[in-house]
Each structure stands twice: as C-alpha cells, then as structure tokens.
Amino acid sequence: MARTRHYKKLEKNAIFSIARFLGKIFQYIGRFFTSIFKIFDRKLTIMIVPHSQSKPLNFQTNIFALIFGFILIAGIAASFFYFNKQMVGAGGEIARLQDENRKTLASLDELRDQNNALLQTAKRFQSSLSQSLSLLGISQSATTSKASLQNSDLSSLFNTNNLASGTAREAADIQQLTSYLEGAIQPIEQIGKMLESQSTLFSDIPSIWPLKNGIGHISMEFGQNEHPITGQWYIHKGLDFSTWRKGDPIVATANGQVVTVGYDNGYGNYVIIKHKHGIYTRYAHMDTFRVKKGQFVSQGETIGTIGNTGITTGPHLHYEVHIGSDVVDPAKYINVKQ
Image (cartoon, rainbow, N blue to C red; front, side, top):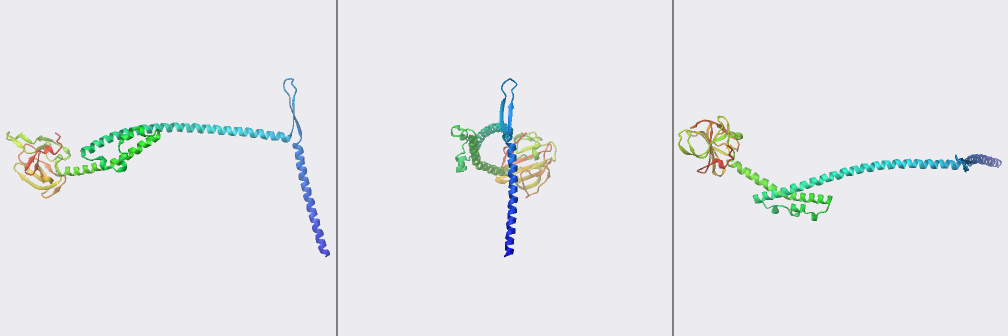
C-alpha cells in the first residue's frame, strides 16, 4: 500500500515537471514573438523635405508596414515585367500566325487557279471523249453507272448558280469531276478492248512494211508499168522494195503459215504465206530462206533476206498480196512511205 502511494507521488512529480518545462517553453516562445512584434511595431517617421521653402511632409509608420509595402511594390513590379514579357511573346506568336495565314491564302489562291485549269482540261476531255465514243458507236450514257450519271455532265461544273462560294465551291467541283471520271472509266475500257481486238485483226492481215525496221523504198508500184528488161508495158502484180543491196531482212507482214518455199525461173527464191480471211502473200527474188514449209510465223518475224535471184536487174524484194484468186494492190494494206 505504501509502495503504491510512492509510485503515485513519483508520477505526479513527473507530470508537474513536464508541465512546468512546457510552460517555460511556451513562455519563451511568447516572449520571442512579443519582442519580434515590438521590433516590427516600432514607429518610424518618414520626412519629405522639398527643395523649396514649403513645409516638410511627415509620415509615421512602423517597420511591419514598411516591409509589407516594399513586398507589395516588388510584387507589382515583378508582375508588370512578367506580363510585359508575356505580351511580347504573344505579339511574336500573333505575327507568326499572320505570316502563316498569308502563306496559306497564297497557297489557296494557287490551288484555285490549278482547280480552274483542271476544270478547263476536263471540259476539253469531255468533248474529245464524246466525239471518240460517237465515232466508235459507243453510247456513253448506256455504259455509265446510275451514280455517275447524276454528275457525269461536266457542264454542271461551270454552273456557278448552283454551287457554294469559296472553298466549298472548289470542293464541289472536284467531287463532280471525280464522279464524271469514274463514269468515263468503262467507256475508255471498251475503247481499249476494241483497239485490242483491232490490233489482233491487223496482225492477221498484211498491214506492215515487208522489210525489217521499215528500211528501203518502193522501186516499182503495182499496176501498169514498163518492164525493166523487155521495155514493154505490162501489169506489175506487186510492189518492188529495194535497199540497193542484198542481205537485208524480209519480214512476214501478217500472222500465218508458210505454204511454199521454192524456186521459180521468174521469181527466183520465193516464199508464200497463207493468212486468215483467204489472204496469201508472196515474197520473191530472195537470197536466203529463214523458214520452212508448214512453219507458223508471226507478223514482223524474219523469213529471209533480199536477193537477186530470178529475172531481176538488181537486188530487191517483189511482194504480192492475193485474196483468193485475185491479186490486189499491197499498198491498200500497208502504210506506204516512199
């Protein structure tokens, strides 16, 4: 029991000591702030003495107010410099944006000029395409899709009453032009297919120059001519091609099959090729052969060389075209350039 009272007494003494210690600390802190406050609360008199004989001006204040005023003035000055710097930067950014805007407007003007040039070209294209389709018997309206037909007439591209102004107008022009060109794809594809079929047809008829690379010239035409040896008038049944030398290559003027490779006293060495549509071609006075009987040849393929065999006055190629049993003028089938 006595021990318990002893412990409680010690506990009370410890609490009292701690409370007294904390009280002294708070007392010192209070004294510190009081002294600081007294320092900042000291009165100051500011006197402004003019150079004239006017009465001096006196202002009473304390250190706290003076420091606060100095901080306020410094903050205002710093804010002024900061916002002034921001204004200078904003002015530079505005100038840069204005310059970019001028460049953009210049590019837009150039784009509009190019767009107008494109529309003029499209107008000429429409006219040429319509004429070509008319000559070929192709109906443009029948080959375009329903969506393309709605905007396929390029005349609407130049109807400014139905279009918006500015950039919207250029966009509408390009959209309608794109629609028209999409509609023109199918007619152009048909033209390509037609030309391809015609190219196949031309390769089956004797339609090219019989000397390789178009060399030589025509030394005697088809029809009535004076015989170079007898001097008598006679019907020349072909065209004579000359290069003034022998050995130059002779080519097949159309696709076909070689039916004759032989020699004749008049024609000398000669080759006959059978083509489609009942057409035959003869190549005479040859020096050498490059084909044999039964061989299939393509248009432009070398079949031999120019010679001086048979009845001739010099090296040349005698070229004939037969349709069935009729002999025709080869010049009607080839682009003759003398």
